[in-house]
Length: 138
Image 1 (cartoon, rainbow, N blue to C red):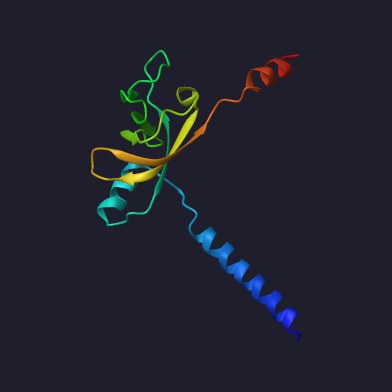
Image 2 (cartoon, rainbow, N blue to C red):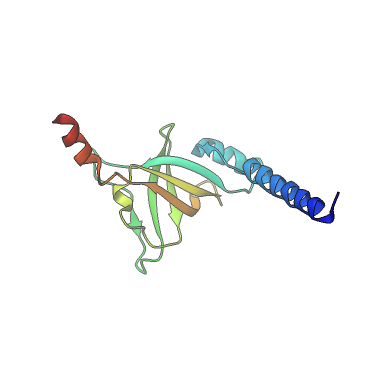
């Protein structure tokens, strides 16, 4: 074989290894209960927990506490098992945070009381949702 062919095969092999390792690191969603168990078991990797913001009977978000300096905040998140957990995020409140349909927090427990989020992903309601409903009714 030519050196060019060997080099090409080597690059393809490296790309396959990189893709396989990134797929292996893909995290699944956990609950706060399993996240605590993982922490107690000594696992310190980032954990993905999906849930909804805690709301009162009228649908208003409750438990959101923005610090005076507005560069960090805490909020209450209810996971898919109904477990409520206070979450701390050391960044300003994202735009449309209170309007999000669901929230994914990526982080870990530093102690049993509070979940520290390194990153927050939000699924916000679509701005086209109302238009689609009206169009479907015509």
